[in-house]
Image (cartoon, rainbow, N blue to C red; front, side, top):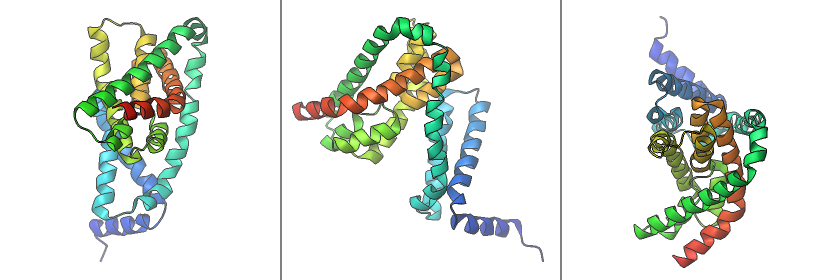
Length: 246
């Protein structure tokens, strides 16, 4: 008798769960499904595929009892591609080089103010609400791209896993609300909108900016990279001082 379809699926799952193919297969399938939903929603920011895919993957791993280490053996290939993808942001940025030379000083000033204000306001507000020191340290780098933010959080006494969640939430919130906030403030210039979005909402905001225009995406990518660099150097000192004062 032929093997029934459910039994075949079980056999496929048992095979994949014992090999590094599990992480890669799950990641590609789940993200593809999330992106299809994202596209059908008209690319609405609330339907961002990143948090949707993360939620589904976490649920699958928990439900099947699959260790994260087993999953990451295959998913690390996708993790490796983050490097080339980030470097590729330099291509559209190079096409804006003539504007970068003219706007270098205002952009750097905006970057410093943006990083400092978002860090100080987050820590101060969380302290007023009674957050613990570990939570404050985890919250400080919430607007930085995730790998850098987790490293900063660990250095200043935070919880990297909590920081990862806060970084994702910040990116999604920024991507969802940025357009309405910019419109309310009558900020129309794509370069300004993109740079602000990349400073505050890191990679998710940058991806959203590229959907608006290549110019906005280029400046968002620049802001994301410079924000990570500046934050890695300055945030441990700034956040450490704030934590002592508060």
